[in-house]
Structures are given as C-alpha cells and as structure tokens.
Length: 531
Ligand code: ATP
Ligand code: MG
Ligand code: MG
Ligand code: MG
Image 1 (cartoon, rainbow, N blue to C red):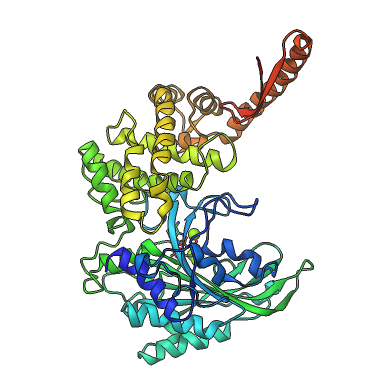
Image 2 (cartoon, rainbow, N blue to C red; image 1 turned 90 degrees about the horizontal axis):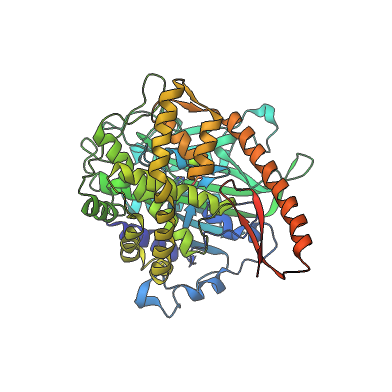
C-alpha cells in the first residue's frame, strides 16, 4: 500500500464505523499552555471538559478529505459523537520534545501525522479495542504474533483509581487467544508514566493501552523490547480511555460520560507495511519512516540539489551511550534525515501562521530552521536551499493538506529570508566555534563562548550544544545563563536610558511607537523611532 492508501484506509475504516471525518486542526494550538498542536486530541479538549457539546458532524463542512468523489459532504456527516482524522502534530518542545532524536533514529519526527478515532460519551473500551484489532490484524494484516498490547497496571502504593485495567486486559486477551497466542506473553503491564494519561494535574484522565510491534528478524522477543526505546520494537497506536476526573484533592471520581481518544503514528505504520513488503519479508526489511514514499520524494529533491546520495546509514551509540556520526556518509545521512524532517515542520507551521521569530514558539521554529541550515553545510549547501523543498510538500501532501499548496509561495519567501539572514553569520560562527573548541581544550565549551555564538552569530544554544555533542563535548549551560542574565540587565538599563532620553527630546520631535521587537538575545527591546 502507498502511504496515501494507508491514510485513506484508516479513515475509510472508521467512516464505516459511523465516524465523522473531521479536518486536522491548525498547528497553532488554542491553548496558551501548548507550544504547538502535539496530539490529535488537542482540538477536542473542550468536549472532554464538557465545555462544548459533542457536535462533530458540523465540523465536517470544510472537509474535502475524500476528494472530489465526496465533496458534497454527505458521507462525512455521520455522527456527532464519533470522529476520526489525521492530525498535523509538532513535538519539538514542552512535554513532548523529540527534536534531539531526529536524524539519529528512524521513527521520531518533529512533525508527523497522528491518525485518530474518538468517542465522545459514545462507545468505550470494547469497541475501541475490537476495532483496533480489526483494522491492524484483519484489514492491514499485521502478523499478530508480532503484536504486544500494553495495559495499565500500576504500583498500588501510588493511590491510582484502579489497580489494573482488567477490562482492557480481558478484551485484548480474547483477541490474542482467538489466534492461538498466549495473552500472558502478548499483554504487557505498564506503569503510570506509560499507561495512564492525564491532561494536567486535574481534569479528565484514564488508563491507556498501546500497541507495539516486534520488528526483529525472527519476531520472537516475547515482549521484552516493549517501551525500551529501540527501533526493533516500536509503538504504533495509543488508545486512551478517559473515564476518571482527577480532583484537586488528589482523588479520582468516575466520569459520567466516558470517552475514547486514540493516536496512531502514520509514518510508523507506513514504514512497517512498506519496509516489510506487506509483511512478507522481515529478515531483509528496511523499516524506517525515512524509507517510505512519504520521505522519498523529499530525498530525491535534496539529492538532485546537492549531488550526494542518501544511503540509510545510522550511527550507533558508543561505549558512553553517545550517538556521534563517525564516517562522512553517516554525517550525510543524518543531515538528509534532519533536513527532510525539519522542512515539514517549518513549512506546515508557517502555512498555519506561525513564523520563525525571537520568542516562544516562533523561536522554536527559528531554532529548528537554523539547525537545518547548519546541516545543509554537511551536504555542501552554502546558498539558500531549504526553501526549494517546499514544492515537494505542496506536490505530495497538497491533496490532504490544501493549505500547503495555497501558502507555498509565502512559505518559500519566509524560509528564503530566514536562510539568507542566518547564512550571513553561520560560517563565521562555525569558524569561531572551532577555534573556541581548540583553544579551550576542555570537555566543556564555556558559557561565554556559547553566549558569544548566540549573541553575535545567532547560534541558538541548542545548535551549539548539538555541535559540541558531535565532538563528544558539553556546553556550560549555567555559565551561558549568567551571560544571558547580564545581557538582559544591560537591555533593561538601555531601555530606561532610551525612555529618559526620549522624554527629553519629545517636545522637539514627535515619536512613533512601532511595537515591541526582540534583539538576538531574546530580551525585550521597546523600539521607539523618531519620525
Ligand atoms: P514514543 O514512546 O515512541 O515516543 P509516545 O508514547 O510519546 O511515542 P503518544 O503520545 O502515545 O506517543 O502518541 C501516539 C502515537 O503517535 C504513538 O503511538 C506513535 O505511533 C506516534 N508518535 C508519537 N511521537 C511521534 C514522533 N515524534 N514522530 C512520529 N510519530 C510519533
Ligand atoms: Mg514520545
Ligand atoms: Mg510511548
Ligand atoms: Mg504512547
């Protein structure tokens, strides 16, 4: 199956189960507590909180999910209490930050699609688990002996609302038994961290159950690799059963209406289906999100532009557990993966109205962009190149996310401008970094050096840390913070001075306030211009 068919097949499956197919929400979250939309459930929070009634059929109006054939919307409008979609997600900060894994593993992205199905006070565990099995095993033909379901089974001492999710255990057990597998092997207990979902300290919450796939050549690990952070066994689907309310006094009460919230990694599922040639060949499988038809067109374009080849090498952890690309080709392959990941993040974020900038989520984007531009040097790019990849996304993803096609030109302009700006200081910064490292001759780059790179050359701290990591070094973060604080103090003092000076000349020259801007340091500087 192509990835487009896989996505469609997920949505078709849930439409058959009377789900309304709704559009992905914007990457710009409604909640001020979130940097970016990071899960399919974000847009449904008001329903879970009871602040909005379940009315998803009215959300489908704008959807052209099924292309021309269903653009009249009739088939989409199925139910108010069941929804399914594919959601654009970014996990590059806050609670979910997968940025450092990107390039060094094959299944964590900063931007990815999360396929999901929801019940708002409608069906619960029984249907959720039965349908998950029906889709994954029945329709997609995942070999059940390679599947492991985790269930919530906490340490009783922490006072959780239920000892273990007996109901989920029984439902999965029935499925595994039916195909002759031992539930005691294929159902794995999980603790509060992995298998209990809470939105915050209080509010709707509940146990979850996840499906993991054993991808070893023989597929006989008996669940030993589940949640061990290895590509040999990866999590594909999280089924959350929202059934409790966490009260401010630390107790839990059952919710009057129970909900289901699921999230499946679209790129991961595609990588398994495509990498094993529809499960026919695990022994020679090349299972990596980057080996799918989702990433191949991006790599083709990068290869065309730089003349280098992507060869799928992956640096392995050394004796100290550090992952440092060694050979030239390893460095090149890491760069390919990072750039292909980051162009999706930047393009979709900008298309949703989030610009690279100097504070908050905008600065997160700028950091990611600068990282990509630095990796571009590894591929030999010295001129802006990143913006030239947007066209691939518009071509390959524009049917599913029309905004990327509509905003292509704008996204390209923003990226090009950002690249040009960073290109002006990047090489000098790299030179300076190299000389710092040589002159300091320590295991740690000093805070002053990191600050100089930040302040003068626009190197985000995490980029300097990354470059240090590539040489097995660390950065003195505390020292950096000290320099940063001094800078803030200077900026505050300068601001006071400006205001005093301005008030002195105010009577002579009219002034025009053009808003707040931020200098390199991220400190607020009030710009007041004389007109
Ligand atoms: P992992 O343990 O692999 O980091 P997770 O438990 O953080 O995943 P969830 O929050 O449960 O992930 O999200 C639901 C699904 O989204 C996961 O089962 C996985 O398939 C997918 N997913 C999560 N994070 C990423 C990511 N960074 N890139 C691609 N897919 C992801
Ligand atoms: Mg994670
Ligand atoms: Mg997990
Ligand atoms: Mg999970």
